[in-house]
Length: 610
Ligand code: COA
Image (cartoon, rainbow, N blue to C red; front, side):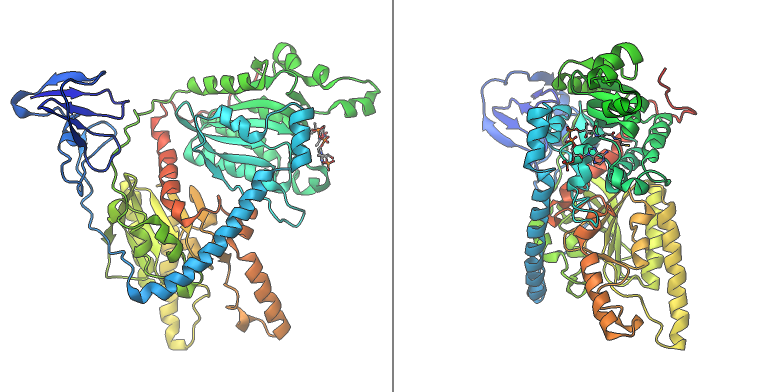
């Protein structure tokens, strides 16, 4: 039998000349399609098979006859059997319908709010500021810059709603875009000022967002690119930006620590870098500056005039020529903005990573539509359906190898695959009882032992468990102990953890379910999520005056919304339920990249600019 094997980069993999052409599209679920043919297509590499044996590379594709059981391939190109995990029952029953409909309606309302915030974030500093930025200052808008820097627009933006409706005003996207995108195939964190928002000045929320992006780079060992265009600190709020540990200075501290950890950093000066902002490119390992657009100085021309009376242009004081030819503060001179992003892309190509060939493995889609998740996203704790229905819409083939299914049933634990990535899933299915917490600790340690990333699907109870009588006190103490153990297991797990708040994020149970303070690699909220110590209406017993009860309820109502949380950067963003599988797949790929960095031994010292 004569077989033709196609180079891996083509989408077609195998061609068999037995009078028929077997085309296997990489990534397709069913192994292939048969078409009559007379000659091999171009690029096919012939290969003779002995005794009907099929070469290893072709085997999975030729053998994928059963569409329900596609064979997948591992990174090394070896045959990997499909997951044999059982299919979890996720079908909607008639009895669920009224809850499903109520959730669906609520999800519609939440999605409208999501779209409104998205529009607000996209507007940046508004029309006038945009015109000033592009027409007068002749600069590119931040999203156009990212288009030039990144391979494609398929990036993971972090906390796009940060900064909206804060006490000191609405700061669209906190004045800077952060996220993770690919540069020449390598996932990199980007931190890009949006100078249409008050000249790109740093508000307290901007600083918090930049520090979170650096955290993401450190935790996941991702190279980091800064696009700097900023007027420095927003002076009226200087006391909330300058002095404390996690204020402005921390950005520069992190730059040194990241460099010492061998996390590469590149800066592109595509605007003003004034005062504190001047240290961002100067501390980066390599920096690029754009002619006539980029400037770096500690004090700008107005300050020079005030101090010495001398009049000097920004270009002469700290322009591209000065820094590329005289001071050495930058390493690359770009005549135009687009050249600067090309420089940055080339610098990223010099990093010592060996990425695997893009295999596009065949994966099974969930058996149920991800759109159903809108009806499963609980509008309140009482509207929570069995969380296995959510799991069945996230995992490949709706398969789930459940662990301890009959014990501690208010927590569902088990293994599944998301777009081919093996993960442990820990999902709230009621209160975190004594038994559920013991099971949670056991399962988290199991995943840690096997280096399997954990996905927490968090929906915790809206009020703390009360101790109604003395004889129940012992049971409650036991629960307290078991929850503490689970917290310890989660805190010390060294495997990556991703949390998605699918409903409630309340009280101490949320810590055990890997809340923000337990340092998950990523934490996202569904728009229906509620984040507060106790849910609105669950604290009445703690307040005496009726007017205080109403006031507290109203306050909790307002402050517990997912958008309130995201505006304050208590999470990495609000994601729509139907996008969850896609987002998780991206995060898992991003987390995995560190395996391909060839040199990552910790250094003692950062790279110093000489
Ligand atoms: N603090 C507070 N507001 C600031 C600011 C700062 N550091 N820098 C700029 N702004 C405000 C301006 O007042 C203006 O506000 P408005 O839109 O309400 O009028 C807005 O940001 C845009 O500034 P503008 O100067 O009109 O835009 P530009 O594109 O011509 O210049 C800068 C932008 C950043 C180059 C210029 O504003 C500048 O040099 N700012 C001062 C930088 C500085 O000295 N920082 C030291 C901080 S420690």
